[in-house]
Length: 431
Image (cartoon, rainbow, N blue to C red; front, side, top):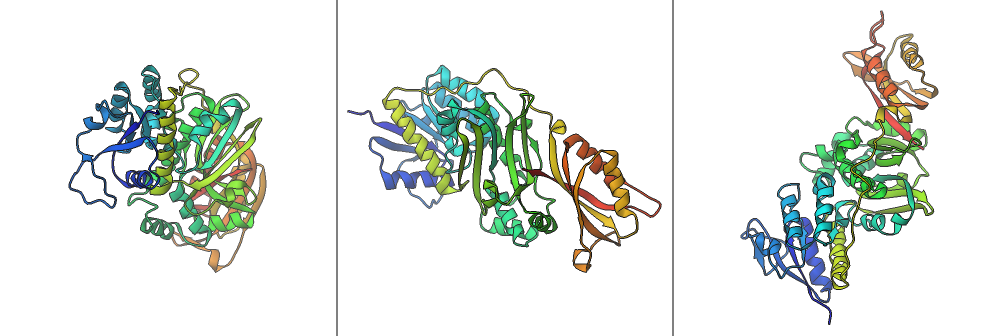
């Protein structure tokens, strides 16, 4: 007769509620949800459960519990809950990207010492199966790169902007729909995606990579003008998270808005959806798309991990997550070559474009195209000066050189005044 597996949940928020619904709907044979740990026993909840407790020891130290599901969020006290559960011989499932990205090495090492399993499929990209494939099927190949849309909030905003909305209006709608927090900074800055891509890259390359290793750029400076010009050039604008092996053998880690061809897999991923593209040998491409967050998608991945670990408990198997050494060499983002899109607001006087192009020439830019459209609809006023947007695309160049060029353009002065007004805006072109 198969052993019953008993489960405790720490945290009864959005994902916890979704998980309880899945247990009640599917009633998995021999898997029993015993207790849910909450802060406030008197709080009204959308989903009822008969055995609530405010004592976390009823999960962590209860000898009758086999799997602890950590859904408290954040790094503290979540890390303490996870490590204490492991020390007490519990298998752990979590959807906590923060604690995995910051403390994964410590957690996986503890799990190996105590011979227990860690499930964290829900920590990245909601319902998209990616953690388990990286640990299992894809681990038999050689991965060259991971590129993904890993934040549903920013993808929703950029989708609305592609329809003509400005950033502020699109953000407000995202907040009203519950896709964006009251303070959206963590999402729109790219930091949320940085945590996620650091986890995926660590698993793909078997070298521990921290969120701090990821070069981050957000979406707050993108305008409808940029989206419109990108469309005219045959591109969509997406916030991409990527991890790529370079020819030198190190790994380029970045999160940034980018122009991608309209026929690219990721260009077609809109609204709050996430998507991941992995390239390598011998499988060539692994591509998947799905809802990246929310009660249903994340709870689904957590539920899958519970079922998977229950089977491993019964078969007395453990899955070790081992990394090759303490770390790897991260490519200097300033030395990574990239094609790009530059938006300048130029003064409406003779020679303004000539002055700006002179800066590009000094920094050895090889310009592919320069577009400027006249007319009142395109005019922008800076300090009482009428300016027109000029869009420049270029051949590959080191990003450090690009940054130096942008600084010089912003401070450029001539005897006729400033040729460039406002802050020059730059996005990479990913081909």
